[in-house]
Image (cartoon, rainbow, N blue to C red):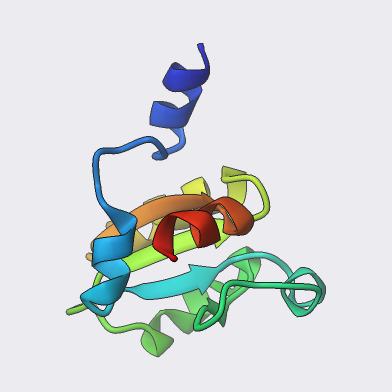
Length: 103
């Protein structure tokens, strides 16, 4: 069941997130500013989920986007938003988990 949930929310893909980051992927943390300030992945940018649509111009469409949050729920929504606007996006799940995958 856990694997099914991971697939629904876009986690657990065979995509090598570390390679994407090395190749210049943009990491976007969609948590609130307060959550981001309490800790985040080095090099990530903070665009809270409710502000994502208004800030798409801060992202490059020619670069892959990896979204993260606290658990993977908000980043699943962010992935869908980005894909609907023509971005190549991956759900990195929780930022702490993502940090372990890309370092």
